[in-house]
Amino acid sequence: MNEIPNDIRTDVVHARFKDDHPIVVKGLRNAFGDQVIHDNLDLTVNRGEIIGVVGGSGTGKSVLMRSIIGLQIPEEGSIDVLGESITDAHDDDDIDIRSRWGVLFQGGALFSTLTVAENVEVPLREFYPEIGDQLRREIAHYKVRLSGLPTAAADKYPSELSGGMKKRAGLARALALDPDLLFLDEPTAGLDPIGAAAFDHLTKELQATLGLTVFLITHDLDTLYEICDRVAVLADKKVIAVGTIPELLATDHPWIQEYFNGPRGRAAQASQERGEAAKVDKSLGKGA
Ligand SMILES: Nc1ncnc2c1ncn2[C@@H]1O[C@H](COP(=O)(O)OP(=O)(O)OP(=O)(O)O)[C@@H](O)[C@H]1O
Figure 1 (cartoon, rainbow, N blue to C red):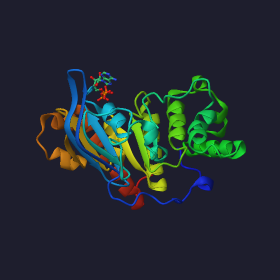
Figure 2 (figure 1 turned 60 degrees about the vertical axis):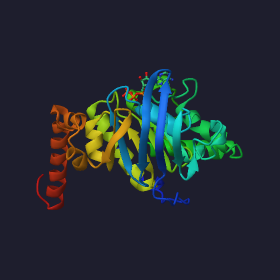
Figure 3 (figure 1 turned 180 degrees about the horizontal axis):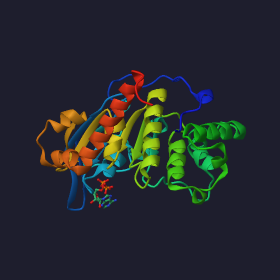
């Protein structure tokens, strides 16, 4: 399993956002022409949580994430991130908290002509041009290792990496600036089940170790069960429910019921229960 190496484990060294809600979205409306994606959408994210964002294809999960990070200007509503208004900003250069979040886009969005380490250096160059070449390289290599990649991967180009390694490289870049907030857009899509579970484990460990708040878009039920503290469900152009999975299961919305109680939902739940039982057995000294 890809543990964070002990020698680079770190305590949270810089002051974290003190408020309890690093993301607050109110009355959000997004539309493309006649197609309304969000209408009067509200969402409040708690500090330090991993919040899973689910919904059918095309319900606007990525558009919501893009709105929160200032890449999509909404028609209506307000978005506050880490206490600053995103919706009052005139363009994304105006958002001086951009250095306090990291984003892993679908597919990684790595620069193909740069090595992994050079990709990680991009945000460092942009936000901290005063950092010298040697230190910048060292920070990039540290982030590569923090993301569970072998040191040798730092000098490889994206085309030389497997899908799982590309995700980790994208994660390394997202962590480049020691963010408070991490946005992950379908991080386990396209990974085999073992790779997906390893990525989940890494996400959870980084969240706990670095004190991150994680906004995680996913279709992966195992991810929801394994690592998400709460889940926000997008449907009908809104967040129709947000809560723990047991709380969501207690609602009677048909989409939620079908999603979590369908065959895949039940399999993910059974798998999580087996995992919990194994942990209890282990702590009691039972089993192999
Ligand atoms: N720049 C754009 N211009 C026009 N339409 C867009 C644009 N970006 C997104 N859309 C539309 O908005 C809708 C929501 O897209 P979005 O990518 O947020 O969905 P999603 O919930 O993330 O879907 P999936 O789970 O399939 O990734 C889709 O119908 C998409 O075609």
